[in-house]
Length: 247
Image 1 (cartoon, rainbow, N blue to C red):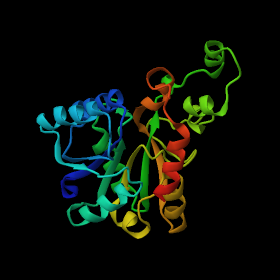
Image 2: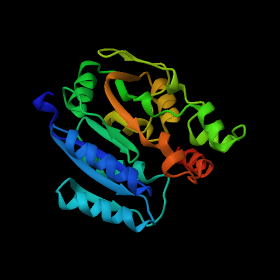
Image 3: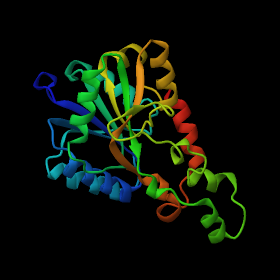
Image 4: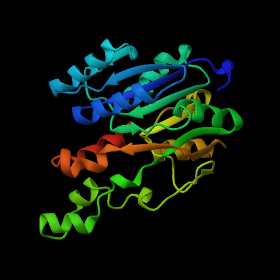
């Protein structure tokens, strides 16, 4: 990573599900090996274990700042990016707390920043999901004993395009918009269009002539694929409604 880039701020958005939050923060703490400034933003979690997880990693010295929102605010990331704008470098990372970053030969931040540096029009760079966590829908049918209603299909990401998409190592692709759960963003471009849910952000950036791509060189696990086991009552419809309000 070019020394001229300097430290990269990475915003981590947390909300509930402390099992996933711990795994996510542990992976970021262990597998980030470049100059990174983590800002943890908790969106008004009510589970007391969330605060304990955050405190544990704060004691490790992981965060430069911990922001606790007084409400579950769909606009929290856009607001924090605007607040932090004077301190942001050319790029800003964003990670949701159901993401585990897998260890590669190079640091994931270094890899993504170097790709951004090599493509001046690239404003939104996502990574590829580890497909091993997708649950076979027929297996779920066998477990519940009936055809799957919409809630269970959504819970298991049964219609996700990521089940079939693939970007080879060393390549960039655009099989769909980059998943919003792990992104490297060009700060100036986000200043133009504002932060938004991934599909909306993708369309806004493309309309301005920017590129939005997925790299095959950074792999992440999406722990929400395991909600069926760990958080079977997770409200996928409330999640969808929340995401619609981000933009």
